[in-house]
Image 1 (cartoon, rainbow, N blue to C red):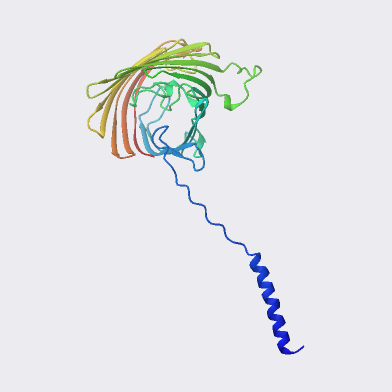
Image 2: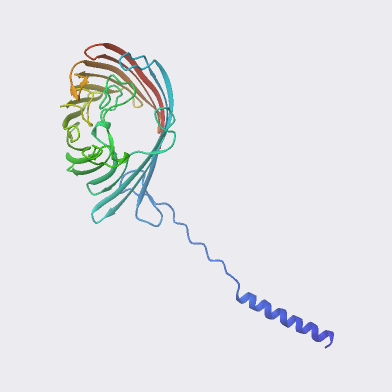
Amino acid sequence: MNIKSLLLGSAAALAAVSGAQAADAIVAAEPEPMEYVRVCDAFGAGYFYIPGTETCLKIGGYVRVQVDGRSSDDLSGDDAGYRTNTRAQLRLEAKSDTEFGALGSRITLRANNNADDTSDFALNETYIELGGFRVGYFYNYFDTGLPGETVLHDDRPYDNNGEGADTLNNSIRYTYDGGAFSVYGQVDAFNSQAGYKTDEAGNADEIGINGVITGKFGGVTVDFFAGYDFDNEETALASTLNAAIGPGSLGIFAAYATGQNRYFDAAEWTIGAEYAIKVTDKFSLTPGAQYWDKITLVDGDFDDGDAWRVGLTADYAITTNLAAKATINYTDVDNGTDSADKWDGFLRLQRSF
């Protein structure tokens, strides 16, 4: 074999190998066109379609920085002073249309960094809705109400720590909304997430039922609440009225309880009112007052004492999605044996999104 034959043979071999590699070469696929986020306006502002689905998603929440202050309270043993808290809340809402009506869900995560709560994110109001049905972990009537900070809906007037009725439970609700008229019925499993409810433990009947009827008449909205606590065998009744009057809005809240129960146990009865005055487009003032009668509990029954509270709340919209709120309140309490008074308030800055 001469040199010329060797070179020709090597070239032929290389050509054959190169041809085989070219036949087996991996060709990169063309990139798929990007599907841009589409706005979903079927369920209100802020929703967008999850790419590749017909489900609409809304992401929201807020960051809040707050300083609380109070004077001493001889009846509850609270010391005077101040505290700070930073709160973060994240809320996800998903909705879509089905043959049974709108299918919705909400996930709410909240964290505080003060001593009264955990610094880790914890599950807050979270539920599933289909048509008029709602099931999950959500607030009841006594956690909503008037926008000011003077009238208390479930908290006791003699407690600065915010203790009061049981407002957040695993529940099931059905709502009928007729526009100007709506009604809902609800069943609550009190504190059911903490453990099994058994007869042996004596907590099997920690169940409540409640309902609300709401009517809207022009600039007036009025509702009526009724709830029954099977464990305590007591009833709570309440009503809230809101009416646009002059440069602001008048709000009135009243509640009555037959005895200590998980819906309302601040007093045998209470009535409070406030008037939110729109001073400018960005600034509003809300003076308020409230009175409670028979605030002392003896073996589950309301016995004696009364209290009253007055205060003022100021709200200022600094810019879009950034607001400041300040409140100062004075409370006078007579429990039937001793009396005391206190001041409390806070300064808050909140960025919502």
